[in-house]
Amino acid sequence: MRVNLADVLPSAASAIGAPSFDNRLELPPVRHAVVCLIDGLGWHVMQRNLEAVPFLSQFGHDAPIACAFPSTTPVGLASLGTGALPGAHGFVGASFLLPETGSVLSPLHWGGDPTPQSVQPDSTVFERVAAAGFTVTTVAPGAYRSSGLTRATLRGAAYQASEGIDDRVEAVRRCLMSDQPSLTYVYWADVDRAGHEFGVDSPQWCKALLLADELVMRLAELLPPGALMVVTSDHGMVNCPDSHRISIDITPGLSHGVRHVAGEPRLRHIYTQEGAQNDVSDAWRAILRDRITVLTREELIDSGALGPVDVAIDERIGDVVAIAEGEWMLTSHTDTRVSSLRGQHGSWTPDEMDIPAVVLLGT
Image (cartoon, rainbow, N blue to C red; front, top):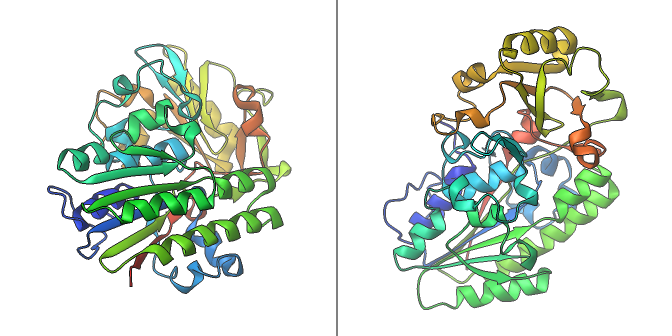
């Protein structure tokens, strides 16, 4: 299987000597490892905008790795934090139905109900590394400290609230001074935000990318001998013009037999009324044709896109799953704000699925 985002933290953990982790990135042995995740930074769009990453452009030409599928932040962070694919950790989209509650969970807007441990009970990479006696730290905005997503997928690290570049650099500097081998995770959100609002390749997006490149450069300057940093992302992004937006709500035939709409515009989980799965999938295929790939739950599981799927979470997947091709997207009243955005992700195109894994060594 191709190296993917779920391999990043286990590889970094192995590099600092934590036991029982696979080093699929083949990182060298070090005392300190930093993983810096730039939300929304796809490999292909980075290659098309190298002038906006003057520091990373010196190193970022290696072949990309794959993000988790669907290509969206909750799925990506869950795969990063657990070292597992979605079929195991159970985060199968930007939002998805929890059969045990009968309600749709939106992990980016999740407090404490249901409890994070009930949604994702397996130990995280951070928990396992910390239990082995290593120093483990998350460096990210304070607003995310107690979120349901953090507590479900990234729990186990000491949380250092850091709002800007200076705060993050200072927090990482302190981690690198630890007498104990350390694993540090740094999160940066602004590239994703600019891409959603203004579109990838826009001047605003390029400005955000330049700032992220500055963060990476300043973190790299901190690395002493015997330390490394992996720069990666959770997904890429594509622009979806107004001419390529299909409304689930007003397109004739798309609402019949549908109970819940979840996911996001580039990948929709459709939960059908009892006994309506085949009728809904047939209707959606006939209406949407080659603009959207329509699969039943069983077909998606058989495709292997989610990795092996645990029977305990298979009903979180839509009865029907609609995967956008090209620049198409499926809007819905269930997420009006997200459906209005220019930049989108969630599907399986290379621009969305291919992400960097740039390894920088201390000198």
